[in-house]
Image (tube, rainbow, N blue to C red; front, side):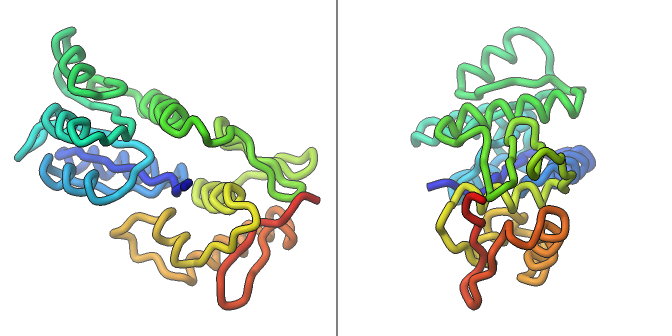
Amino acid sequence: MLTGVRILLVEDERRLAASLRAGLTAEGYAVDAAHNGRDGLWLASEHRYAAVILDVMLPGLNGYRVCQRLRAVGDATPILMLTAKDGEDDEIEALDTGADDFLTKPFSYPVLLSRLRALIRRGGSSRPSRLRVGAVRLDLGSRRCHRDDREVGLTGKEFALLAYLAERPGVVVSKAELLENLWDFAAPATANLVEVHVSALRRKLGADVIRTVRGAGYLAAGDA
């Protein structure tokens, strides 16, 4: 079953965590955050994520051990490990404990974002790279949207919402499901917020793109 693009960020440097969370949220990801290894391990064990961004130097339980324990129970969620350390031995340990990629602090945010997207693509190989909703085309790799021959600028959350519906052709998706999969668990999101984003998509792309099924939710339009 396909799920929303939800990321787990486990980082004890709170300013860095807040900055990364804000950037990823602007890209349309739902981001849950933990600031120590034990909380990160619990979240990763209790919820499904498209990927985990995992710092090495964590209080309680370091990133290597968190990664090792997840892999020991068969959790194959893609993991991008962050560390302030440098050197070949640290990279080897990260990969040997089960991380999929490794990034040394300080790092470039665009590089982190690019690697994260690559991990998500590899981790969800059955997910198509392009989606269609009526006359609208979505490119998941470049995160670009076109209606007919016109490119339409969408916010990260608008893109994520439309892609979520497009991945479920013929399926009515409730507001509660959209909130659960596309917004952070800790975010004060309400059904009204979903309505606001759907209205914005209709203004930008046309009223025919998303159908409302009264009392049930939303349905992506069929091919035009």
